[in-house]
Amino acid sequence: MRTFVKRVLGTLGTGALITGIIIGANAHDKKEEINPKTTSVAKAELIEWHFNGTSNSEKLDASKYAEYNSEPCGGTKQTVCVILAPEDSSNPGQPDMSYDVTPGNSVASRISAAVPTSGTPTTNETVISLRSF
Image (cartoon, rainbow, N blue to C red; front, side, top):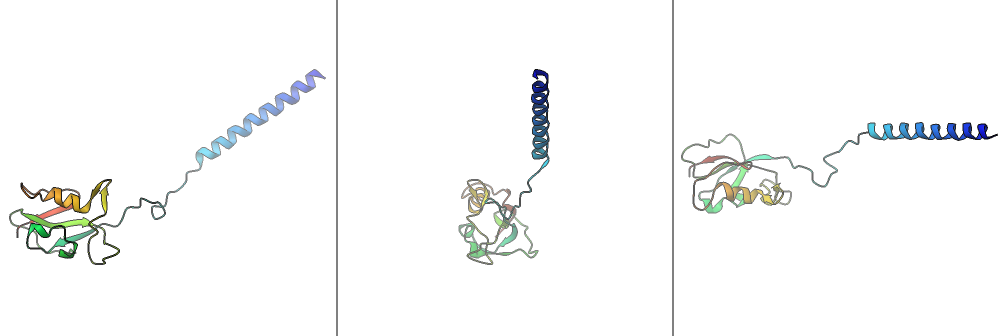
């Protein structure tokens, strides 16, 4: 009788172990696809915008930008020429200046960093081209 009980317990234990391994292997193999449109931090489509302002004081005014259509940028690097930003859903046809390019760095803050009130303008991940006035 003891031998029979040991065999039954051994068989049940082995079966449980094999079942656990199979379930674990299946759980490991399943990879959940992440849909960027359903995640809360989906990346917006970045559009090239051309700055049509006449002074650096207008560089953060979204209404001074139009979708880029190969207008020339050249000359002395004094101000913004082309930026990358998503379209503002509340103001279609304008860049979204409050969009976070990176956590804590909006389009507006990246423009300000590229074209400081004093110093030489430089490009960055948002301001991709500079021009003269």
